[in-house]
Length: 132
Image 1 (cartoon, rainbow, N blue to C red):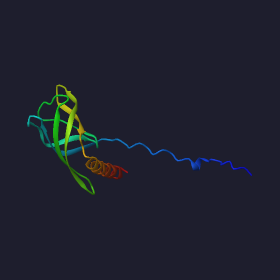
Image 2: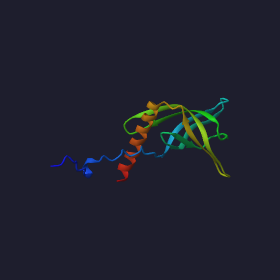
Image 3: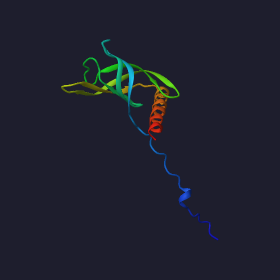
Image 4: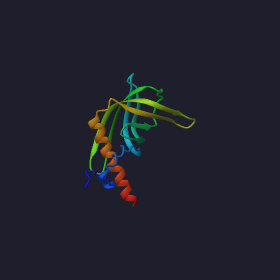
C-alpha cells in the first residue's frame, strides 16, 4: 500500500469570486458642495450609484479633479443609510444638452461603504425579484 494521496476534484477549493461591482440608476436627494462652499447640487437627482462612486447632473459647472462634499440618503427595502463623504470628480461630460459628472468617493469609511453596498444589493435584489 502506498502513502500517495489521490487528489480528486472535490478536494480542490475554488478561489472566492472577486467582489462584484455594479451600479444602479436611482432617484435620490443629493447635496454636493465644492471646496469654495458653492452648492453644485441640492435636490432630487437621477444618479448612477455604486459603493465606490456616484454620477449625476449637477446644477452648476464643476471641473474635473474638483473635491466635493456629498450628502445623500439611500432607502432600501429593509434598511436605509445616510451617506456623508468626500468625493473627487473624475469625469465631466459637457455636451450641448446637459452636464454630467462622475465622482469617486474619497476617504469613505469602510464600514459606511459596506453599509451602502448592502443597501444597494437589497435594492438590486428587490428589483430582480419584481421582474422574475
